[in-house]
Image (cartoon, rainbow, N blue to C red; front, side, top):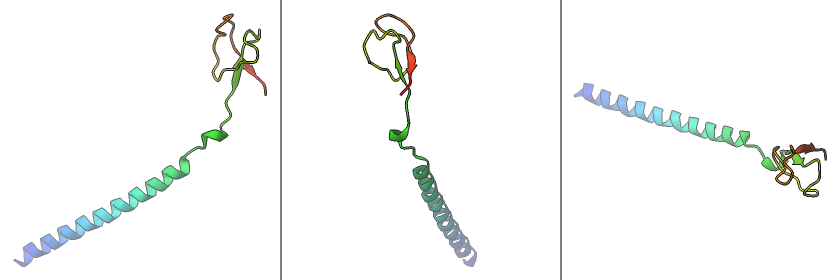
Length: 78
């Protein structure tokens, strides 16, 4: 009888210790995620435009070809 009570008490303490340990780790990983978030409004993006100015001062966020004349878009200096 004493042996079964000791086994049950040990199992309960092991379960409680595991629950406390894992809950502490989850809180720590959540705080790490908050620290690694990047504010995208501060990220500078390059602008590209047609060197022939086919579309006036229109710019694009990615390099590619001009939809009007087919020339490669060039990076625009601010």
